[in-house]
Image (cartoon, rainbow, N blue to C red; front, top):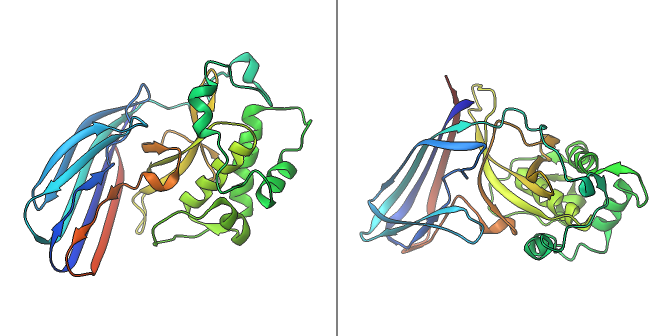
Length: 284
């Protein structure tokens, strides 16, 4: 077991006093048998009333409601987690799913169908052709191997680029321009996996990286594929490998644009400056 601290600070400075509308916060990591939350705090200024719930994807969501006008908004999430996923490759698939292609069982398929629907009209066209060349029909290959090939290919073919603007490129946009952010690569992987007939979803979370003068960890994005016998397994096309012990999922969704860490609006004069800082630290 390894402990980590995730500190996520967000500051908004408005051009004048504004009325803050309710904000949705997805800042609490997803708990499970591989990850436990040891400590969690959420500080908001101005003071907000918080209501917690689980959304349809079982993500933990806080709704912050404000009563007083403000010219600044600060949100600080401080979480200490216990990570038990020390051997991410230690899993077995159900016998029928070991080799690709396979079919989900009649029991699983109704639940997984929303995660199998091709996005961006990608079932035909250049994206489908790209996937077919990468994974030719009739090839004898294991399911994990074909997913790892797809993950590695995106990392090798595409050029990583930090994009400060909000939103996610479509899979076709990323394939065409050959550049993108982690969320763009995750969306491309997800779309490609669905073309292969697999259930895939988008993941927003955090990544611990070796500290440097410019990097203390970051928000990150990757994709998960449902593998019978193993469950939802993460693949990170930005680094070209399966998700490991230093990835911490915060929220999952069928559509990537539906789970920003913070979402909200305000009523007042336009104009706001945003400053975000994320620190992911390994603890003793």
